[in-house]
Image 1 (cartoon, rainbow, N blue to C red):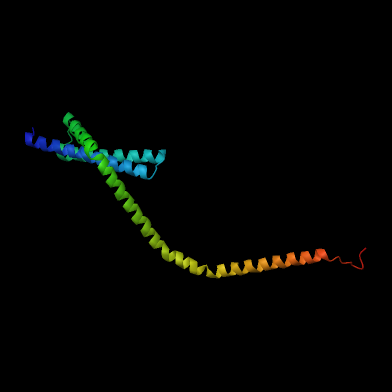
Image 2 (image 1 turned 180 degrees about the vertical axis):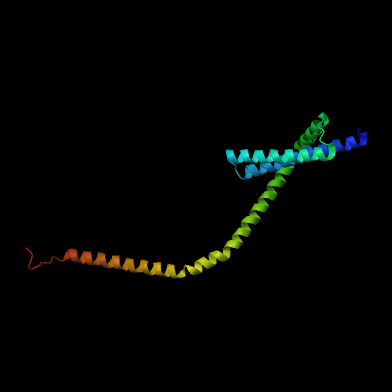
Amino acid sequence: MQPVADQIIVFLMLVILGTMIGLLFDIYRVLRKAHSLKKWGTNLGDAIFWVLTTSITYWFLLKYLWGEVRVYVFISMLIGFILYRKFFSLLMRERIFNIHSFICGTLVGMVDMLKLPFKRLISILLIPMKLTTGLFHVLSKGILKMKSINRSIGKGVKRKIPFIK
């Protein structure tokens, strides 16, 4: 049998575990909302959340309670989860969202910086093609203009071909 002091410490650790589960749940909620997951994404996210939560709880129970599951385990984890949701959830969701936005913005900026040399190289390599297409465009416009001038001149002049009647 465990001493009462050890049981109180384990109880408080389980309350902390319940708050950690609440924090994980808020992280998942923010990620799901920020990325607008469809049904399959939500199902996959739910599965990952529950596997992670179950693994953490299982490890904790094995390490500190020798795998024994008692009623106070569920009660203390529920107390921790409820306290987290009541007092910290809204504040933490805002902070998680801000951290997520910062990380995503930083990653997008880094990817843009990495793409910049390749964009420059491609634009330099495409200069001959742009010049060729521009020259072709100018020449084709000129040819079409000459054809329209020739047609308009040809309409005004009636020629008689001597051998055809």
